[in-house]
Image (cartoon, rainbow, N blue to C red; front, side):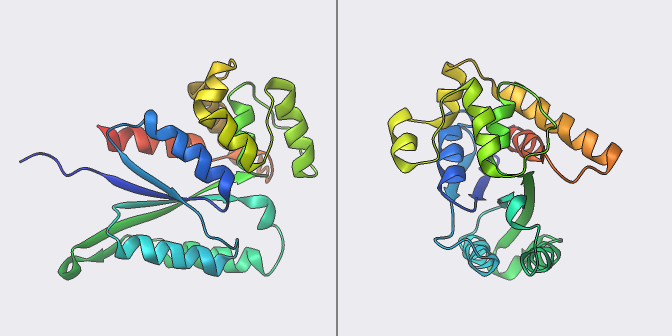
Length: 203
């Protein structure tokens, strides 16, 4: 009997993550990836999506989180409660359910990981616009549905324009090493770890 195929639901907080992880389906061909996102970016909506994914039988639910919206209360406390709720795997053998829910954070937002396709930075960004300006120095990028549809896959678009997923993951890991060494609470991404986990699920 063959090994059970791993299924991963990737929950972002908006269309950016949806379009990006959809574009990675071509890279991770042996892993069934379904990107999705809540229609409203509240913690409650995210929790509903997680519960939906668990009931649908996904083995893994990866939540991709923009930390710039978690800097203030009450979002910070609500988010911590959500992480605590899913700290242990959901295991309901009688229902045939086993699911690991994990959270992967980026500060300020997922676009930092896109910049990491091209170069490393630990610069502190006061707002998202500053980060997008830096990204646009390496590659044209617009945070619009028209742009996402036009380029036909964010990942391949970045690679066609001189970026590399390997670089992005390496730079993200470097940002986490520096964050832990210096207690930096800005300009970091855990998406390198997510890419590593996705590769391991393919084996």
